Length: 327
Image (cartoon, one colour):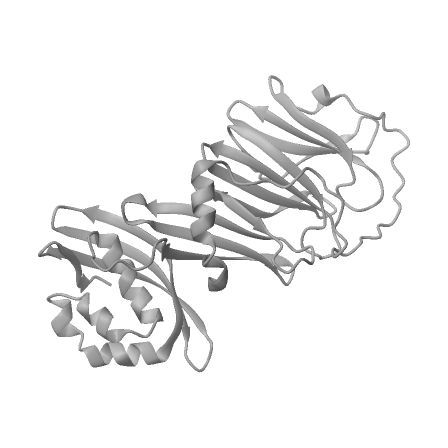
């Protein structure tokens, strides 16, 4: 996953200037995408078609988009409807059931908010090469904050497969050109220190595997001017097997409690150390408290482990240092 992050500098710069690029609505499958051969379903002959949208959309809501499209791969078109009710954009599919049709919200029993400021597009096709049709909806929450939501018909509901929001945009990529989309949502955690959080979703074994990584957008700084920089740099140095640099970030009492050899041993036992979350719980002029979610892989066994680390930090001679681990 880290190889993808090398491209994020250009992506964030683009997203800060304009909303993330969107795919055209409902494109035909690419040549490399698997062709779905659906069984031919028979619509309920009692259903009046097309239905009256006002019978299904909440009163006072504004219909933004509607189109007849096959949303489940059975060879019969349903009616996909996107609408806005107050601040929230939502969607539903009207299926040919009964005399008047039946509406199924996107998201099932927990309808998903698809956007706030604007709807930007739909894609209805197999986007993960699982042989089934998905509905992907893109929208804007506010400014550069964008959302992407993916749904699939289960036989009873249009269940949510994925919902991502990125304050700096959501990138959609078919890296191997085989009709399988990956998603990366970007969030600027600390603009002053250019610390970002990238959340990557990749289709794996029937579900989207979602992982997050907190990174320095411009690389690890030479001078540690902010407490979040010290906390993040410590674990980046651990991942790079640089125990001397880790030790240089420590101050008393932690420096006396943690011999450099202990950090050398720790570096040898862990692989692929990443920070999944980073927050400052408190910040004063010369002290701070930071909380981090840390994910690592045990060397040799390949066993992944997650931990929550809470640090007290101090500012000394204009530089921030890790003074004490609190848990």
